[in-house]
Length: 500
Ligand code: AHR
Image 1 (spheres, rainbow, N blue to C red):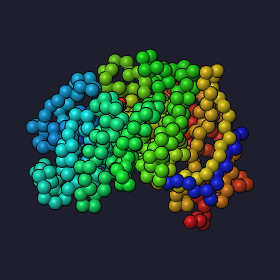
Image 2 (cartoon, helix red, strand yellow):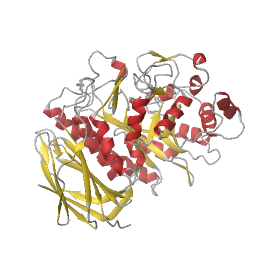
Image 3 (cartoon, rainbow, N blue to C red):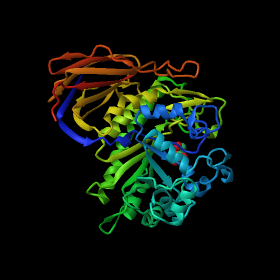
Image 4 (cartoon, rainbow, N blue to C red):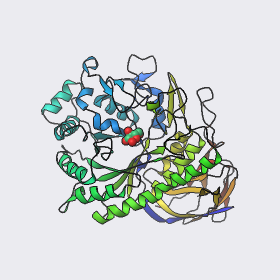
């Protein structure tokens, strides 16, 4: 039996809903086919967007979507993707398989998609191969409400009203595919580009600097030092971090469904490294931003495996198993725990690419086990993180040791939301939960559970789905429940007369 203590009086940081964001790039079947099929398609769509995918994203209350890349962003010229479809420039997508990009999904389509989903757009501008003028024009095109060359062009293209865009990325991976810059060089570029990222009307941009890969602390240091502030004025709202979980090596990746127990444990050791990365990057950020005004934005994360057999190696299409759902759960717990500093996170990538929550094949769509983690965790969005303590045991093998359990507790509008994962592949665990300052009267729960390699396929789309969590027992001072091996559960508690 494992003890869990939750202190409902101890309200910590607000878990910003943007921690539950996604990322979609012009890569493989991520956008084309996965999201956008065009109006002429016989797949059910509204203005070209697949209805099944949009409905699934609405169900998990997707808060924010990052686009158009990734590496594609620093290669993308937004004017290629506006205007009549037949006139749009066809380009080669040199980052991802040299395939033809016909630009049929561009600015208007992305904004339409976000409106259909009901999420915030997060647009990543081009620093690597673009110009300050191009980025500045894009912002004017999107958000300027008066009369100007860009707003008139927008109206000519069928959208006279300005859109609202908050999240703006100033380049992506500028240490690599975004221009091979040094941190100081990028820092200087950020200062220049940022100057022309204007707030039109009451639209307020939240400008995010292209941040580090994994443990490249020198990058964070150089960019923060050069560009976080000019004098006393803050230039940067956020800085990003990219970290992918790779249980093996990049040269010897295995497929998502083909792994040994040792890969399973090693995968968690690597996923849990996210905690150390966040703490160390934040420590550096604090040196240049002692008031903690700059947020850390983990805008690419997830488990990256070998592509599925018979698929294009540059399309990065992989399956997703219960292991991946658990890997996502432990990392979301880390983001929640650091929600005082981490302001957004975007799983890479939403549909058909790397660690997806949705897979499509022609007209068919399936949800991966990771999708259900986002469903179980949506109650944490904008809730207050609660102080809590969970007793865990160490499990694993000689090489890799991991905690057996992971959790988050939060409260919003009087509702206490608890998510707990059991990472043990073999052993179920009873959780004995004490709650201070809260008397639950109404309890409900859901659970995702399966063998570690279990997954959904187009032939068996509901192999892994959510079920009701049976037998949540009320006891003196709290509740108890049983978590089977390889499971993630959500418990919602309500009081009869909620305290404020
Ligand atoms: O998500 C795939 C790629 O990984 C992105 O384009 C890039 O930013 C990262 O290296």
